[in-house]
Image (cartoon, rainbow, N blue to C red):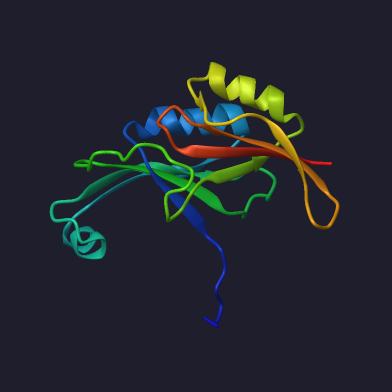
Length: 151
């Protein structure tokens, strides 16, 4: 086990980092962690493996974890590859999840803010007998977001 390991943040590469950050702030209550980031130079090139890289963006504190909780890091590269089509079953990081009070209402709000529906709202029973109501939607850039409520 790696000594001192602790979850820090998840990174999301955006076409428009400002608009996507606003989406997560307004809908999920994520909070800006200043300052805005703007990285360029030989260290960034070496660290990312991307020659001539420039990254701009921001960290947003995730809701429900207090002032030192983990963040969602939303960045934009000056040159980006084409986005793959959205798919919930593609290997790799699949989605980000938010617990909400009312999944159907949260879904309506995400769709009204430019997100899209991936599936329907469903309720499953776990092996432990707990009920979870959930659905997948996307943010305005096509990143998958799970909305869930435990009952």
